[in-house]
Image 1 (cartoon, rainbow, N blue to C red):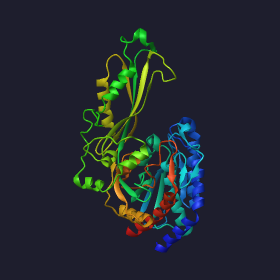
Image 2 (cartoon, rainbow, N blue to C red):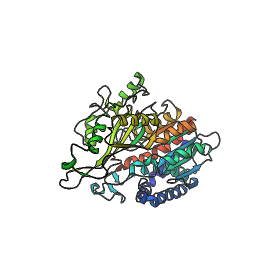
Image 3 (cartoon, helix red, strand yellow):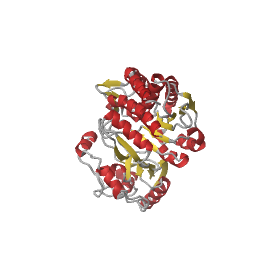
Image 4 (cartoon, rainbow, N blue to C red):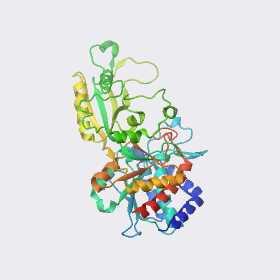
Length: 462
């Protein structure tokens, strides 16, 4: 496609910014919280809304695909010809719970513009970012009449709960999803004016640990010292999972971890990380972690173990002297190549049971698995992404690993033989998964421009 068609698409995007913002706000009003059963109808409503938005943008075959869980949304446009490349765009329309809602400055599902930011649950993770791609396609189809390449969309409603339905769908629908490269916008840039391309993601192993003792709460004066306390036991187990520097103590945990070679350490070292900015963003008093690794390496290239929640006993106002009947913990482990989440789960289970005394019963449940992934950053698609970022933002993107997990990236590699380019437009201080989630609106609009330039550049290179 001639470059002037790209200019027509860019002109259309610039002229329709307010409409694109209004549509995103409408999308965000739908509380598509995948983990809450009472929101099931709203999750489906979001899928239906997105499918219609795709039709309005000019995409074809847009449909909601039922699964055993929440539905998928598929669409495509395949008229660029057999010699043109095909891009598979992935995203998710489900969002995290809004709780604690009393910490939001505005209602989480009543989007508000605050200066250069749009505040709402899911605005950065991932509704705003996936909608960038829909609007970039619309700009080409409505502004220039056609796309320079073929494109497919697969958008899920279960990413925030591990993506089980899409994990089953991908290997069963290889022909439908065949493409030359996948593109995902579900990550962040280093700063508002410094784009980055993520080439590595950590995997996930999520475990529930339940410790039970007596069959009811006991008076601590009558039974303390004679009946073991499940909270004490759970705290002992948790305290023995890591040392004071963050090194995981589970035997065999690091056996399959691929060490960082000098080339990659130099690549990561080129990414300047402002520790003061990290502290300002997080509100933490100091950074922490394995001292032999840089902060950026700890955040994306090293495995971790974190207690995400722990509860038991009496937590109301005042005191209540009891030995509680049970205690519970939710523990996640972020994994790097070549750690297998199922093998890590087995190691975790064996070690926790070894730590558990015979005075309580311990039950362990697996609640989410995702494999880590590494993508080649010396590809035509990455070069096109770099060029597009450079044209719109005026700076070449930095290459880095991301600490989070996107399960489908590993599925694309394993089942489709498909590399992924992760072109994020969020920012580190977007407060995803937290109250007052926000999206920097200039990057929403620049994101649309960047994807327009990417499609044109990638098609010409291919």
